[in-house]
Length: 162
Image 1 (cartoon, helix red, strand yellow):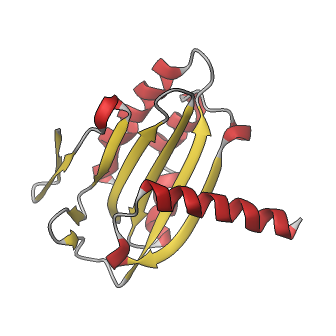
Image 2 (tube, rainbow, N blue to C red):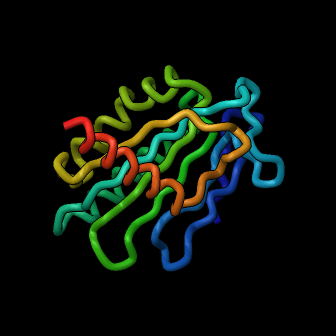
């Protein structure tokens, strides 16, 4: 378990998933016993789920960049929490983050820590899929099964639009 501190008021635990394949949902705006604890949260929040495949030989780069992003996560205003999961055998990785509003999510996406990770993380753009949805705050944390379902549904919707 990793204990993270957010500012001087908040701390939270990031539980490593079994087999060292990621981190369970944690964050400065989430309390496992009480749910969303972010002071600015409303009845709905924004969930961003992304998946991609780490290029062969780039695992070390990916995890170095992931650690940099994780270190910077608590500094991003509007973050409720995040989780990371890696396929046990294979190159696929998933990330999930929850934000109080779209502006907070967009600030994170445009941050230098995120862009550096995107450039250096070893995940080719053609393997990346993402979905952003507004969900009831009461549904946080979303299970990985649900997150993957949302990704699949977004791909299906894109196919229908073609």
